[in-house]
Structure formats: structure tokens, C-alpha cells
Image (tube, rainbow, N blue to C red; front, side):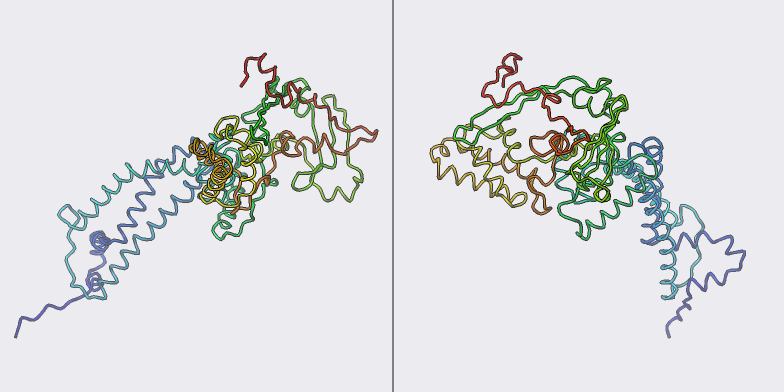
Length: 493
């Protein structure tokens, strides 16, 4: 007969056999023993990572919360969630190992006292030290990088929201170096919470793809201009005259070049002259009634610097009409409707590209053919590029074979620029085409200023809002081939 095997008992039995005083004195060794499992180690790592990251983020949160609204999402959301998950995983791992060993009837053992000779204690302590070192070196760095990434335009437009058109326009704007959150999230807890709740709704819509196309301009949620624009631009300091030169190219074989030169009276400051002077000088207020899209204006009350008010209204303006409109006090965004997300019409975009030389104006009929291709294209991204290049190449190979053979590179680079113009302004998958988003600054591309200045509104005594061009600008040259004024100023292009 072989030697009788010793009776196997569970860890539960071993612990039960201990008297109360023994358990009180020796609870830590069995805990360390049972903690030696993957699940508990993962929990330890998460708790450690969250705690270390918290220490790195806390100084940033105290100093930069106003400049980084998304900081609180990371500080009050992501880190606590990671910490809580780790806290839950640690006892879960201990419990599961205890249950597994009890079920398997593993032989009881003497739990080694805590010390470096204890294998479980030694490896657990080493893991905590190594995890802390890694989290300090890596986690601390990436915690702050995460905070700044969550404030970036790329995070807002490509990670959280389906805003490829807005992001493309933003990359070409004068505000490219200004983070989205600086304009779209107000200061204070109420504005922050409102933005976050709205953001959650938008993220849900993005995940389930049930958002409108095109995405409407959020007119009802826009912050007042005094909180956005006037944090950098101060209306009382706007003054002077700006020289503006507009290039035009005709739809003929030579792409004939002409220029319009304007002296734009910006005005402003304490004097009520010029564009800003008439609209935002001290004491001046403009109230108006408009449709929900702010495309049409039905009634205006103009209060001058002396406090005298004049009302203008379209015919038929009555109480019934008043119930269907929005009443506003005019601010910057009523004219500068798309300061950071401006989309161009094909004529304007092509003229600018030809003036800059990115579209070769020496190619015959490029203005006419370029416009035709831009207006008829209906693809997205790379497909649009391929089809535009194919259409332009086919045109010159067929109609101007000699030009194509001698200037193949110019045709190819021009096709690339046409595709770039198209892909900056047209997004068929998002329902965005030419003119989807009007820009009401000026009046050459969209109705803009003429919503008031060219409208049928009249005062009670029959006066209309001025239509005098010289109130805003002086025309120094109108579509002239070589304007003398540019020669006189020494800036002929």
C-alpha cells in the first residue's frame, strides 16, 4: 500500500480554524497571498495611474481651468472613473481567487510573514513600485497631453462631433490658432454644464448618425459677441480706413484680369462714422426683428448716440407678424456671421486662387472651365480629386492638345488646386454645397448688408435706411485692368 495522502482542506477551512485573535493579527499575509492575481494587479495599476495622474493634473486644474474648459471632464470624469474601476477590480480579484481555491480544495498552508522573503509580498511590492515609476514618467506626461488634446480643434471636430465642413473652413480662417472652446464654451459653471450636456447630446447623435445634414448654424446657442469677439477685439478702438483690392478674372480665353479697389471706412472709436462707427459706437444700439435663420429683417429700431430712436419696418408689419420673429439687439455676429467657418462661392475662390498663382491663369479658358468643373462635381474627398483632375485633363487633351503637351505639369497642379477648393467648400456626404452657409459680412456674395440697407423697410415719415455706398466705402477703381490708384500707391500687383 502506498503512503496515505494528507487530507486536503480549503483556504476557507484554514482561516476558519484560526481563532479570532490569530485572524486579527494575521489578516494581512493571507490578503497579500490572495491579492496575487492578474485582476487585482490590473486594479492596483488603475488606482495607481489615476492617483498619480490626479497629482499631475490638479495643479493644472487650479491654474488653467478657465482657459481649458475640458480640463474638468478629465479631472472630474475620466480619472475618478479609472480610480473607481481599479478599486472594484482589486477585491473582485481577491474574492475570485479565494473562491477558486476553495472550490479546488487547495491544501492549507502557513502564510509567510510579511517580508522580502515572502514571494507574494515581494512581487506585489515590486509591481507597485514599478507601476508608480511608469505612471510618473509616462502617465503624468500623457495626463497633461490628454487635457490639452481635449481642448484642441481636432478633438472637437473629428473625435466628438461630425464637423468635417466646419473644421476644413476653420483651418483656413484667421482664427486657426484659437481653440474651439475659447469661443464655443462660456465662462462659469452654468455655461460649462450647459455646453457639456449639449455635447453629450451631440456625441450620441454622432454615434447613431441621426444628426441633420447639413448641420444647422446653432444661432440660438451662440454666445454673445461681447463674451467672444470683444475678448480680443474692442469696438471702441476700431478706427481708420482699410484698402481692399479684389481680383476678377473673366470667363474668356485669356482669363482677362481686372481689379476693384475700395477704401473701406471701418471707423469706430468714439466717432459715429464708418461701418463700426454707425453700428457700435458708444451710445448706439440697433434692435431688429428677423426670421429664425436671420436671413430676412422685418423691423429695425436705430438708437443714435444722443438717444433718439427711429423705427423702420416692412409693409404689413403688425402684431401677427411679431409673434413669428426673433427680436435681437445687434452685435458683431449679426454681420460677421461666420468669422471662423467661412465657406466661399466658386467664383470668389477661383479668382483668389488665380490671383495667388496657385491656379495657372495662363491656361486658356481656365476660369470658365474651372467654374464649370467646380459647379458640377458631386463627389467627396479623393474621389472628387480624381474626377476633377480627369475632367480638366480631358478638356485640355481634347480642345488644346498642344497646350496640354507643353504644359502638362501646369494642368495637373491646377487640377489639384481645383480639387482643394472644392474639398474646402463642398461636402456632399454632409449636405453642404456652394452657398449652404451664407456669410453676411459685405454684400458681394450674399445679401449681407442689404438685409437692412437694400430692403423695403420705411420709417413712419417715409425714410429708408441709407443706401449710400459712400457711407461704408469709396470705390477707387471698378474692374479696371491696371488701376492707376495702385500705381500711385506703389502696390500694383
